[in-house]
Amino acid sequence: MLLKANALKGFKLDCLDGTIGSVREFYFDDQHWTIRYLVADTGGWLNGRLVLISPYALVGAVKEDEAIAVNLTKQQIQDSPSWDSDKPVSRQFEVDYHGYYGWPMYWGGPLMWGAYPYLVRDPEQWSAPDEPEHSWDPHLRSTDAVTGHDIQATDGEIGHVVDFILDDETWAIRYLVVDTRNWWPGKKVLVSPAWIERVSWSEMKVFVKMSREAVKASPEYTDDALVSRDYESGLFRHYGSDGYWSHENETRISE
Image (cartoon, rainbow, N blue to C red; front, side, top):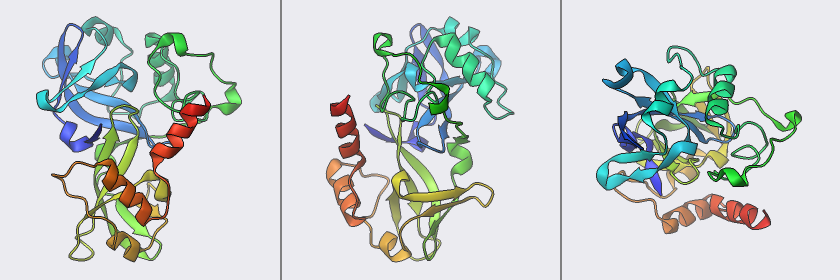
């Protein structure tokens, strides 16, 4: 199911033995554009400490209940490695964190989830980590911090990021929601990470591989509309590229 990151803010987090707090924001890596951690605001529990929850523990979001189920106990979360929310997420923290829970390290291979192209929650399917030379150095970004970044087409600016659309099965970022109305009497459009050429974090700009006119002519996105497969197919056809689902299906079949 595709969900807006902003719509998930405030969703309560229900673990195995109670509610631990609510969704604050997300951290994603800038190579695979995949959510690596949900930032949980524990409110009155744990003295308001912010904790990170990996998608390995996220069962899925229930829009009707405005809740996300977490496959952990409160004690497990309380005893997990402490994260200083005033500092970037360090590699040492991530190593300790994944070691504590016994989860595969997502940077331990070239695919979206390290050795796997999709999220594997069954420990019996986990294989030994890849050789070190296959690992990569993730740079984690906050969805809140990247909101507002300008989108730069091949021939000029076209808008700015206002939201992200997430897949709650793989926890990949499927689209950036871009508001073009600062540049013309426009609309909101979706941009796939596959169409991003590069990102200048210092300039707060995301450079995409299409022209302003191509973006302007792309299918409109509205906040109230569900992103259906028909809409997605039309969007990818507009830019002359295959949908992400075709690549992922091919990968799964070859496994």
